[in-house]
Length: 490
Image 1: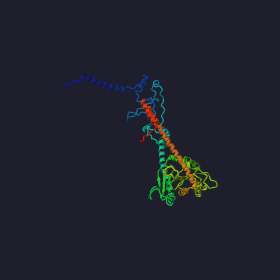
Image 2: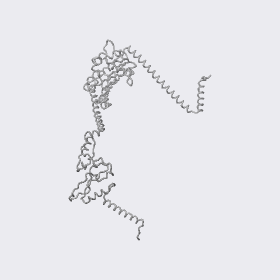
Image 3: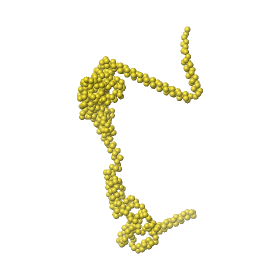
């Protein structure tokens, strides 16, 4: 049984065929007819018809309405038609201007002549002088003559530096920081080892005066303990009158680049401090300090033991004394005169000796009223010399074992002891009063806080609760006011 197509389906097929026919006719007509622009009259068409009998002439295309900045727009269009092997027809002179067949009234504002664009080599040369990069196609026609390859010149050094300035600065700073870290770390280690080799090895000062050197008990134990890149510690024990000695070297932060720059502007010194922990029965009642005048005044104001017990000693008349650059703080003149004896003056503190050793001496402080677990301590602080001149500190380092023995054997006279005992009793009473005042202030603060909390609680209570509370308070007060009676058995 055959199925007949519907009328709508036949109409659609017919409409499609007509559309294809019209499309083919329109494309054929458009290809056969020349292009016409608005504004061209019949006179121009007649002049073109006169040239129909002559051989074909290849006319240049009219210029684009907008000029592009790129070089590729300046190149002439390539001929799409393939070249024929037949001989070319006789040439006819073309018009000198491409605007000869154009209506000037229709296209106003267009230039009559196109100026030549700069050549590719000139563009590359100007860009490279400014440090910029130019992407140029290899198949560009230079000066609109013939196709030629363009060789790109590499970027100059100035161009690279300008383009990557921030990256170069960051990488350079990182490299300098790393180099300074390792070199500064090595310098500090070499300085600490040089001091240990001079004063803590065999036949040295500490080896002769202490039986145990270093942080361990074995022979292979290290002498120095490194607590940081610029902090080294040395421990020694095994000597009479003292529990032990701790030396701390605080060197410049040479491993830190910023600290190195700061130290170059504000000079500082490598320092070593000695703390000797004396036995309780070995040290008498002594408060004593020696330092430069400016530093001695600062110590007298800041340190509690010197402020309570000491005073700045005047220069004694008719007696050899310390250098004029130094100042002595002591509890009594007797203690100052006994500790600054002829031996110490000749070796370190006289004018002649201090000229050589003054650059290394910082301070010296003895006290039996120190804060902390160790009440009785001897403290020395010196500046470290460089590696080559480490032997210049020998006299200063020798003061440490000398004063351990001297202070351990030293005993005050009865007059000086009575004075020191009275000063310590007075200070103890003042300390006790300060503690009592602090305790009273704490109690008053607690009472004020409790009263404030009660007032806040009463403010939140209702009227009935307040009346009950007042009644209880009156009953309590009445009970306290009644005489007390004792019941006794007959």
